[in-house]
Amino acid sequence: MGVCLRYAHNDADAREIVNDGFLKVFKEIVGFAPSTADVEGSLKAWIKKIMIYTAIDHHRRNKKYDLQVEFTNEIYQQENHTENIIDRMSYNEIIEKIQKLSPGYRTVFNLFVIDGFKHEEIAKKLNISVGTSKSNLAKARASIQKLFQEERMQHEQRII
Image 1: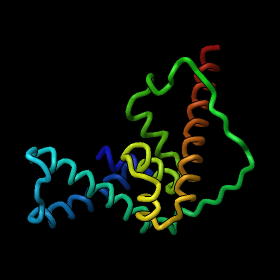
Image 2: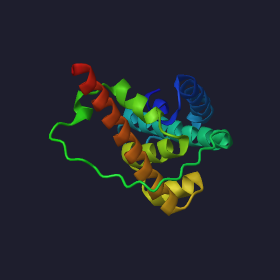
Image 3: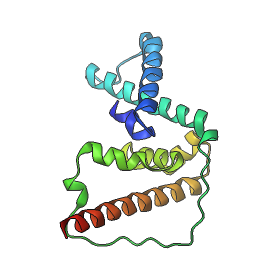
Image 4: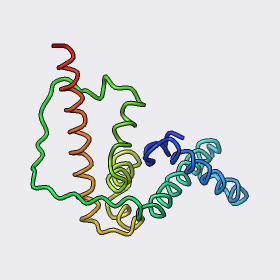
């Protein structure tokens, strides 16, 4: 569920991805062959991979409903803070920020930052160009940074 929540826009979509993913797991379990001596670890990695691919498929099926056009000439600069706001956030708070991203940005962000895919792999899986993958990642990072800054400003205003 944790993997699916990162890719989904909300809990209902994540549950749908989990259900679809486990249907695939149960259909294909007879073909599962552990890649290492650690059968449990291989099984977990295999299921995670299926969940990621199911989330990508879900994104592809629903992207026609996720039309979002954003044009901006703003330049985002990362501020240097000695305190890391992410260290003070819970897992659910971080997932909440990721879920606020547009579907395209969220998918590329998850695949690159969290799941370790390369831009070439992302481009191939999502049927986009490598440049689009890189651009979506940069915009996703900027959006998340902006969300963190807004939250910090709200927190500071509550203190005052």
